[in-house]
Length: 385
Ligand SMILES: Cc1ncc(COP(=O)(O)O)c(C=O)c1O
Image 1 (tube, rainbow, N blue to C red):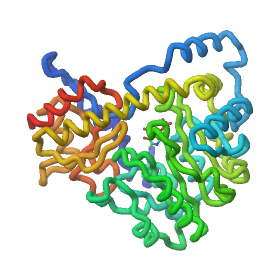
Image 2 (cartoon, protein in one colour):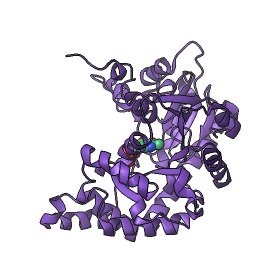
Image 3 (cartoon, rainbow, N blue to C red):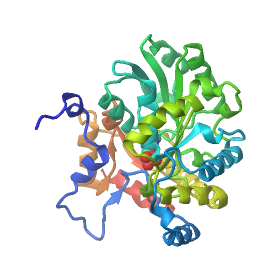
Image 4 (cartoon, rainbow, N blue to C red):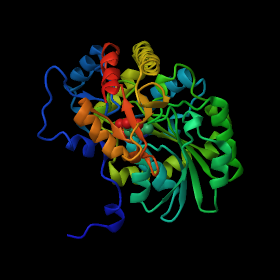
């Protein structure tokens, strides 16, 4: 069987690759494996949400298709959630519920671009973005990572990369893998840059619930629909990553086009996911805020302890969920460095180069799935190598 050359050139899924290094290995009880690989909340969804979903299984409707864009009552509730968290909201017809942010990204790109088009991608990039673009024959144009910039995208650098083939500027805020949060005024400046060039600003805001304030005011602009597309996820927000809960938010006329792809790709977000999303939007603001505070505390603790500890690693950027560190081995790639961490520190994390070209000096640590009390032990592992 012949595989498409375009697909064969794409890197393997990083988490699968890195986890495959553990096959057949065991780790001693006195120094167990620490997993800093995947960005998942360490806590389960709240019991009331689980109970609600259990009850929903008695309703035969739960197992049926919904409209492609999602149930009207769920989209309405999601708009209310936006109103509370962004102080401005899309309308229900500007939302399409998706199988995670991952599928929202595919809807956004396939509706916007044709093979040969370009999308500007800030490095380090969330790896699924370049992987998806390459699979579709769309060229990622990388804005370089500036180690002095704390992971913030630079407006002038990005402006200089815009060409007649550019369809969009793609940014992730808060960033995976640096944790950097783009300030609202800067997001507005990127919107105006996109507007000036008649292209789109695509923001992946998967971690928006962990900022602690309104991420931006774009939804208050009457012209947001002309140049803004949002990729949303509620997987981390409500600890539902396995239910695959996301949304695409854009102009109604754009959503109408995206629905052609939605229909041929998945038809709709599964109803249990929609029910969970509605419940979360209706009742879980406080639960989300409490967990966001825990994640912030976890990051603050990690950052201060890591900076205070004597290690050979340099903390280049960090935020809720993530730290982006430079490893000390100049002659090792990120893959080799990450393997060395497994061998010598019993700690698994992601190699920098899985987040884009020329990022071999870095490692991504995800501390979403470890408790605050475990952080001192994690830092000790970095001191030992
Ligand atoms: C920046 C970013 N976008 C999208 C996703 C995928 O989100 P979902 O699980 O909702 O598909 C992730 C998951 O880690 C992510 O970090």
